[in-house]
Image: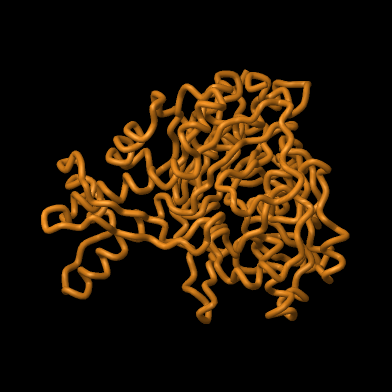
Length: 468
């Protein structure tokens, strides 16, 4: 009998990842990872962060084309995860096929068009999660005020991963899990409902709100063959990339997961009887994200992670261009890390919060304690890596981890994987031992979710029974 596979897809901020997970062994049989290079320049000075949806979908199809077709023919289920908070608009009335250009740009989680004064003008949500710029509902409110004609062109809205699921299944609506709905704002995770009355009172276009289904449930079946995957293959409702990354490596309730990719997160699972607060805690550096079943994750979600390093590389590249020196970003990055590895410590202090933080949006980056002897490339890179960790630890202090019974840190994420200096600073930042989990990534996590779902008759809650 032929082996069967789960296809796991992750549509991240900078890349698309695809894995084929063998269902019996739960091991990755094939994988592909391609950069999307889909960012669009800031539009009209409104601090917009948008991505070219066509480019993202082209990258997805190229990624799929690189997977072994003989294995794709034996895919028995598809799971999709992706970047949270953001919003994509599309028009189902123009035909439910993604090649017809019936969609907007993706407005990402990094979008900054919703100023603090604008956010303060919005109603208080009936949720334990505050609303921030880059959240789907906040972005829709912005369009209502500044470009209402834009919204008239679309009948459906969701995250980029929701859109992919809708197109695979030929849906004329968006089905969204609580993991993504909570990241949009104005969604109550306790009642599993949108704040319809609050939104309706503000004239919000309620028809754009997705229909919510439990995390781990199916959204439908593929309506046609896709890269060799047979028509009629079950497709799971899209999940959050963060929860899937955690799922891929969180195996015990005494573990905390540290993920550093574009941004950075430190998280652990709350007890099964935990209930989130009744109202938003906008000044708290720790939020509670819905996981699977009725479980929640306590999360310190920093906006500044690998992107702070990327910004430093861009700065160096810009300086070199001005000096008439050509050097590729990757080469600069490798030289930075090499210099920092030779510089084992530094008294230079870098606070890399150049993007602010959701609980402290006005904070800025700082470089202090500068001397003539500690401003080399090695010193700065070492201090920058240490600063990323210090910022995260300030959001989730050591005593909070101890109180939660955390006795091990599981490291994951692309920035950690490629940066030995960052790993060294992780091990210095925590009293607990640090391990680096295999396959600690969202594409693997979403495949594991639906692999376990296939094998279980007890529902999504059974997938996390080891954490209860």
